[in-house]
Image (cartoon, rainbow, N blue to C red; front, side, top):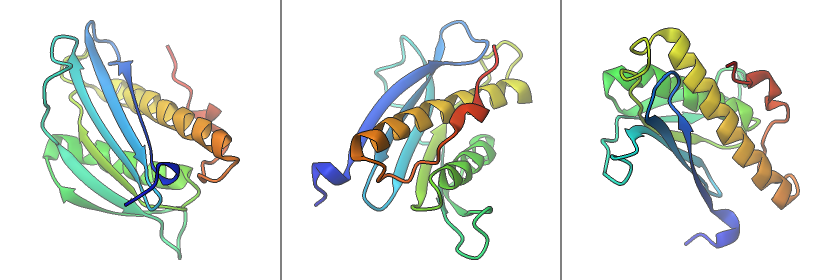
Length: 160
């Protein structure tokens, strides 16, 4: 069983881009051996209800080509698979290729202003990464630099 020092959990939510009342809910757990992230969308009325898992992707560092992490889908739901895979692979790179990442995603961009065009998905993607990296950086500062979070998340700023 893991001690409290090797396991941290955080949850936060972000507004879904160009949506009136939907939010993206993020739950992340930093374990001693992996980072686990779950993403979903819901309206304020649905926030307490269970949501489907969506896709689940496992990504891990490639020792021979660090710029291209390896990934495999453990559970696939086609509309969420590409987004989930991109998120998992990016998080592995951002964590200096030090630990694997599991990402579960059931985000739906259908309720956004333009129905989920690429620009809306990318804006949501950037907002999620900035939020996750902010939490991981805060945890790293608390631990004195032990989490392996890459500096410089400023390049992922979200444009309004």
